[in-house]
Amino acid sequence: MSRKRNIFEDVDNTGRNRDSAPAGGMIDAGRRGARRGIRIWLMALFALVVVMIAVGGLTRLTDSGLSITEWAPVTGALPPMNAADWQSEFEKYRQIPQYQLLNEGMSLSEFKVIYWWEWGHRQLGRVIGAVWALGFLGFLLARQIPTGWTGRLLLLGALGGTQGAIGWWMVASGLTGDMIAVASYRLATHLGLAFVILGLIAWYVLALGREERELMQARRAREPKLFALATGLAAAAFLQIILGALVAGIDAGRSYTEWPLMAGGFLPPTMMDLEPWWRNFFENPGTVQFIHRVAGYLLVVFAVVVWLRARRSAHVLTRGAFNAAFAVLALQIVLGIMTVIYAAPWYLAIVHQFLAVVLWVLILRARFLARYPRSTSIRGVHA
Image 1: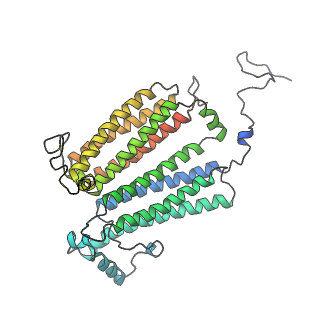
Image 2: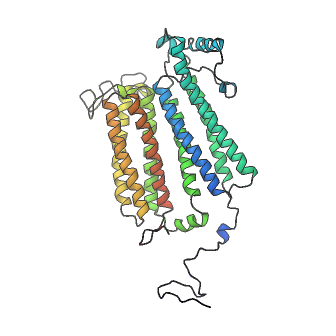
Image 3: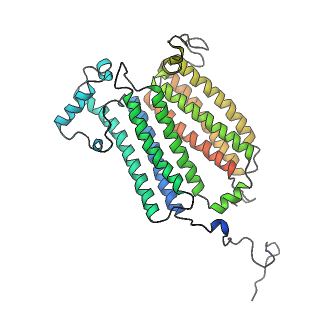
């Protein structure tokens, strides 16, 4: 017996309620895989990479990065187990310039403090590698990876392995010559790749949160201009992160501790003092900090342009995503100024770095919604 229908109920010509869930079609014909399980696994990797970035920052701030002078991906997983092992590691450290020029007279107990920071940083890298490998192989052997996703997930592992090699390339730069720290451009490369990996994971998590057919439908409503602007904003933010790493690599944030001027002027007084001239862009604290400041100003101006354009979006969630990104950018600028004024104490520096992670992910989320917007009904329910 047919039921009575509300006169406002939307039905098609077969009498079926259009609000009922679609049965699926060619888009869903392929193997869906364990999208939810893979998404949870990627979220765990995301959290581990965020912790890795924070620990890496603290390792740098405590001048601990050169305490382990060898790259032993397998055997290095075990720390020194007895007094003889500790003495051996300490003797190796005493042979490098950082000890001879900066830490001469350091005791074994003091050495252990910086050793544990670097060992913990490397150990966390091994944990991330193991979590990726176990997850990837598990989903692969169970044939639960969705169609088209095997290469993407494999890419994360390849980038993680590359990151380990770059980490050693960075450390090696501080073991010879008159270096008391790693080369700033190698530190920037190391941090930059970490943010690339983090960004890819975030994008994959967003994509796996919705079915393929939903993404295909959402793409029809994409906002190409806003998406292009968001891409530019992500690139500008990434450049600023790299410049921040150059500042951190030579402790340039502690050289000029006033704002908005630098030593009483707009330009630092010793901006091009080093020879050859190109060294100033990597090794001159005044020049490096000045570039980071100016890039920050330009980033804010561009972000305002993007935000004003995003306000005209027809999608509530897209507008909200850009509002969140812009709000965090404003907070990051204030925190950056405070970090300079207070000569970059470790607690402000690490919060500044962590907030860069938050900003990076929020910009990517806004970019994702510009490409795959979520429609909402009048009642605010996701379509």
